[in-house]
Image (tube, rainbow, N blue to C red; front, top):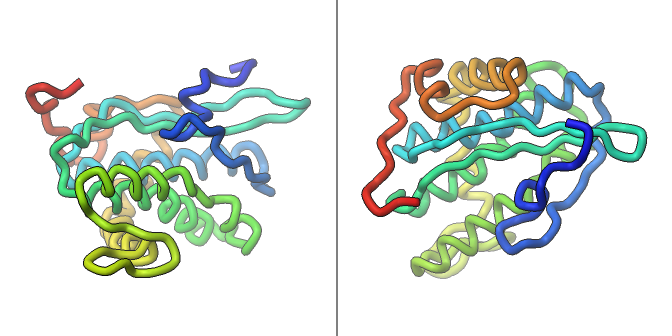
Length: 197
């Protein structure tokens, strides 16, 4: 697309602009990395029984260059809270795993995969249900973001073939529906729960 997408794609769940990082890669390699990020969210969500609506890579021109983001829409209302948190972490984990698997990893590129907005969304959503998730420490009776990333890393490793398959299809097609992702992976996209938006 020629212009930046609507604010809901560029802002976090609180309405603040997501952080912007330089990804020192070619457009093609960076776009595929973003597809892996979104595929990580989508595939892990399906594996945990979350209904996925769609997952996409969004690219546009900006300041004589290009910019990328992504979006995975899902209905997670009845999801086990720690599974929801792991799904939030799976995007960044899959993005970094892509860099390692494709011989592109550097500390700078790994840092550019940071998705603090995913972490903050998980912290805020879990807090609404009385679950304690924290960044940088383990809260009493809860988990740290590092622990949740560990859960996501195990799931991403187990589902790497499915994530890779979805990422390449998303890179080629830009947008995949949850049902298309389910068909590609053999996972089930559960129906929307009654009362879900």
